[in-house]
Image (cartoon, rainbow, N blue to C red; front, side, top):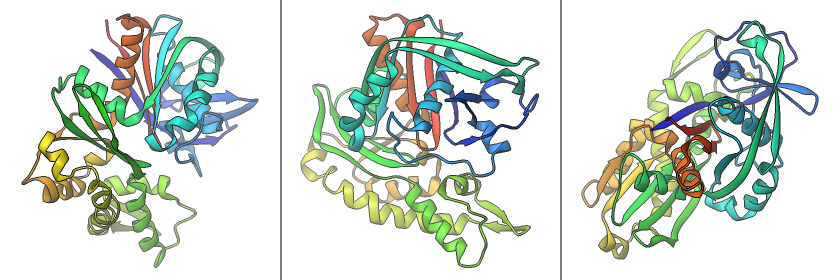
Length: 338
């Protein structure tokens, strides 16, 4: 049903000749933006020196615009134009950025890229016409995917989403969402920064930031000064501290006795759910009182919800319905298979 593609949200200026350094477009994203070449996605993880991305960027920010263009390029030859596009933002910035996003996105986009990175080509241009745009809160996108996607969720249920930049929640009912249960707070970056600060006590980190430590955080080890440093215990401690100091206190106002009388079903999603240490924290607090559901491919759930929202707006026209999730760690673009 879905065709989902994802790539790192990191970007960096790069004017080097990178001919034939990748085998396909998704691994060779080098785009021209305002007369400057940038690499992003998986290419920047291999060729970048100090890749970066702002947390919860606005539609006017360079990284947001560049990542949108990269996502549009990936689907430019796979969809019918003009496309109907849905994007989202964390609940905390949704109202601020909604109109700005529509104003930026709803037009013809000229995406210039260097095809020599992954082929024998040269500079090329793709034109992507966006005919209609909708913007929804990220947690609502997750809810749409749960109800209308593969899960086919019914009735009342909580949705908890933990990503790199934000943690969000909502209580969804058959009649809609309950506004007072929507929270938006720190994401997994909080835990990564704990490990970063711990490592800095005894190591020179060569200007690494939380984004650059994310990969090592996932793998559970890092090479520093030619030494292999095991991060697993440090990571477990940091995630537990993050859960106890950020997630659990915020959920006390959401998963209340009164709301648990409405439902005890909880869906957990977001890239943070790939960490068993975080899953264990949820199980410890809610395992005895709630039915915890872990979705497949949790990092792409919001993007699938956006695509389904576009499908609704087109009246069911799959070939022109697209969803793009500009995440703080990963960008996901979703369209539909025939």
